[in-house]
Length: 203
Image 1 (cartoon, one colour):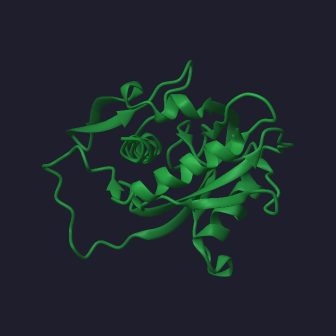
Image 2 (tube, one colour):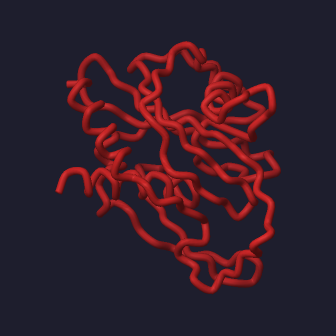
Image 3 (tube, rainbow, N blue to C red):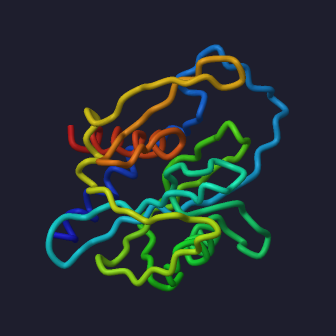
């Protein structure tokens, strides 16, 4: 079962090739050509239980953080020189934020980069995770860890477009709610791109 899913995921990764941005749905946004973006890496973890179907690991950021407080996000953060690669950034941050030993994840591939309104260029790295994880949440950064069925993420009909005011203008963005969790913004856009790749891979 896991082998079939992994083959499907890798095929979808091959079909997900277009970079995205928080401005995709906002055609009037004018981005300066000389803008400087900070590199970041995030861990898109797919958990494979011994029985049942895989799920995606997500976090709810701590409410006291300066950037994106209380929002749903992947474990991850800013690239540091000692990381040497963005894959290492994703692994380091996941270990720091939720206690995933960096020797456990198995890399499946890399999704296209995503530019955020906060001027980060995010590289989402997808990993296979075991179904049973022993997590140690850093409450300074993360309030909660939860899991969303991969099938929910891969179903394009579960996505919606919503809007809210940002700097006196309406900004449109993707959402993919799941139960009490409001998954939106960069996280939803990255997942939407992967869902599109999955659809294209299964035509």
